[in-house]
Image (cartoon, rainbow, N blue to C red; front, top):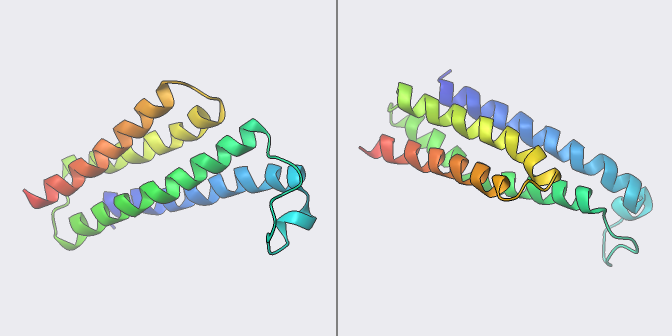
Length: 131
């Protein structure tokens, strides 16, 4: 398995961890009656600020995984794996790990900087595969 695919697999596990970090407090805060319902109405209670941040961090990673998966696919199927693309994949993963506490704890402006580094690492992988 290429380093990029390994980083992608670990990013998938990170997404699962993020889901649990959000779902556990959300169930406690909203109640299982709401969270197990079809959610046809808005919840009667709001999420705490930290749980709301964990939800937004999780959703942001779902979005980021789309582009990162594309980058890993292009690099892998194009036989363009290199030390540079592997480093970019690991930078992406490290930044996404840091992004969780940065968002949950409200680290401004560091959260945005961490996101930007992960985004640039992903774009750099795609560009490296093309050139």
